[in-house]
Image (cartoon, rainbow, N blue to C red):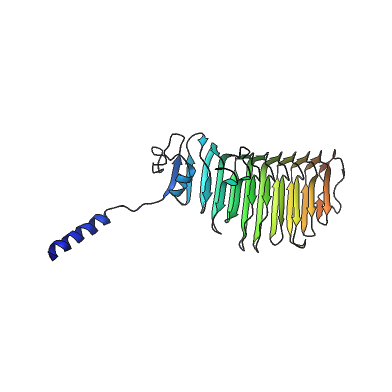
Length: 315
């Protein structure tokens, strides 16, 4: 009896050792014709929704969209790249939610490429809500029709964080097009290149923090027809936190309030080779500083059609 029991246990252990462990894939696939019961790991067995594919994707892996469809919402908790190829549609699951919510680690890099995020006017929704992580990159995308912000970048961290947005339209959102509002003792840097921020109810770009040093560069972009300011920089919480925005080769036009607004002693906006026109006010120093390299086209605004004082020089 003892021999038989030992033999049974040995056979059972051997059979377990032959069962392959579930492994996450470096690349997964989603398709309109896919199924969430598939394994997502090749083009012959794609999943239907991004959330299912993300659960099967290894850290720093890639989710590859095969054809046009709405692929549902997504919560990201680690480093990943989404390759949407311009035809991946992503929508919030309902009211008071985000199409993409990012709750990642301090060194994690998230890349979102070629997606269309549409809030369809649902109540209290965000396009991309970056709550924590290291770096967010958004390229070749459209973010529109959210009743809150298009991109809300507001980590609370003691670590550095980065935002890169390029070749992207952010429009028709109920609050700011892009809001950068980090907390904590970390630092935030950002680059917006060939970005269109238009027809948002509040600012096109709104950058402020009571505690973090923030440096943002805006180049070759259009910030137009927003409900308040085109670009706002605010040093809150005492007004001395360094908030710096450099605007180059861009158009700031037809915004309902200021084209450029610097609020608080730590807030500085530097502008060069840009057009500021059609705004209620071209620029305003509200305890902050707007500086010019003296090579801008500032005209056609209802108030202030001159270069900001204290001109800068190229080095």
